[in-house]
Image (cartoon, rainbow, N blue to C red; front, side):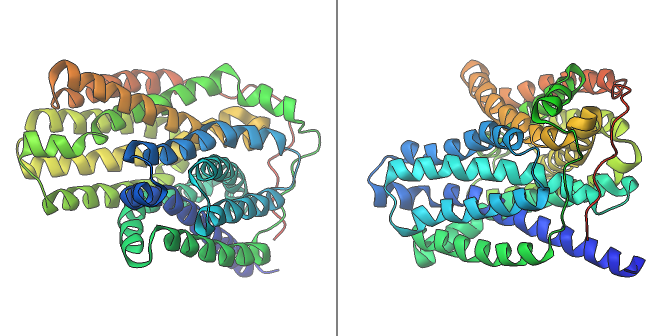
Length: 400
């Protein structure tokens, strides 16, 4: 096979992984735009309907690493296909006639399959490119989820009002089934190296150096989410922006996150350690600008864009550093940043709520600044960490 053909096949594999991440991310965010319709149809309160979002997040944060641990010995192609099949079946339940308890259970299973897909997709993406392009390959998978975060809610809202909330899940199932067929034809075999037992991988994946990076991932998203969760009331009370204008700010943030996640891969390949230090400094500066100049709409918009660019721009570097520090435990460790991010989102939302009770909506920005400043120090300190010197087998190469 010629180099040009191999390169084209690698791009096709990366396109499938990006699309898979995008579809799964859209399905995750779909519920957010359909909460009112779901609550009426299933005769539950809006907070109870909101538990569907929590169920998915818990499935991803806890179930993803558990499934990654259980499937460490399997070929990554098999894992990706299995995760996609579970995803299709899990979304078919609410698409048909599932009641609320079954819907909750299905969301947990779908979240776990999504977490497993992320881990296997990261390993597959880096196996089809040269080592010096690993960060850019990871950024495509991350970019799929970032793009879904920007478009999932508006797309879900439009679909829900056009075909009903169950019809929206029918659309997810249909698109996922097509994705599964394409993945079956395109995805390469990526076997796990011999001797990579689950417990052996866990020993490397949960080493103190890896846990330190995961703590940094969590801190970064505590800083982001303590502000982002309450950005709409912040814009209303501090900036004086409300109604349709808020959508423009949120859309700008969504575009910024997509741009940051896709562009951050190149910086991760160049120097992931430096990217995390610079990124946390940029995030701190953006949050500080929001706190100081948030009353001005233009300054607030630029600060929110900065939060999106710097925050998600670090995502490929975080993934790169975690898998590099895990060494032989990389297949399992690839699932852990998503769990750390979800933990950060939950803690950040809680911290922002506490800040509002203590000092009002403007206090959320102060909370974000404190968390981001701590993240700068942690990023600098963890930059000195190196993988343990082990004589291990090289990373598996995909059979294209």
